[in-house]
Image: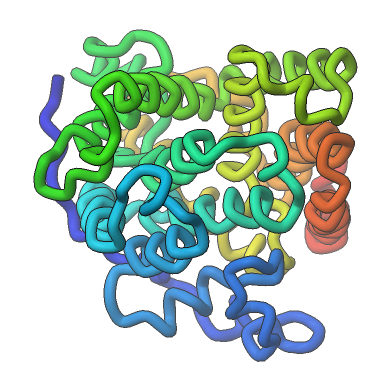
Length: 347
């Protein structure tokens, strides 16, 4: 297995202008709610600009302080800040899969847990697990997808033929959790640590977009059978499914952010995909890209991704957690806005 390099983990805002993060009715960055990590109006880009140091450790400290992890697990502020700093250093400066994306996902997971009612369905270990996953779920992402790694017979693909990147991210996460330099889980018994690590690995593996449709189907079927009563979600398999849905929904939540932030992230994704395509052209690699990436305009890409991947998942989630309707509403507005900007997007 290829040893990961330590990267700067710098906040990636290259090419973003004040207009990108400040162009909306009422001026997004001037809205006090954009500074509230518990609000869906929270603006990760504005937050990044206000922090001179690494963004991910700063946001981790702000969010973890809102949970009683010290009493439950003996985790101190120094431990979770050191853990997040170590994770931050393993992120590469990709246009999209970078430490700022991880911070954005972390805030979304916190919002759904704390403000949308998911906390009723989770215990402290569940919350700790999914927040750790949000921090680490794309560690050492090379800026290309699994199909590219397979076609180029990359060493990572040789090590992990299925869900290549997700296995890599999970293994790096488990290595960080065993690192005595921060001792994040040192207050837990060995059996509790093992249980938590297994849960974390399964959650990160569920971020593979190739498994997204199956995850949505499983969630819809379980939701129909279990309903919204928290006690019906306590069985191990249902509990894990809920955590996987929460993680995946948070991972793709940028499509439901306020329009200026959604557009920023959409351009970042588009830039990363085009960079991968350039590498493939240079190397003579032919890859059957997923339909939402192959030769589509930015508007078409976003319209199809929101319509077929993100919105259906959040509509199911809103059945369980009605307060996530604000994200569903934003998704629909953003989907329609992409059609206005690119009239061919909806074709």
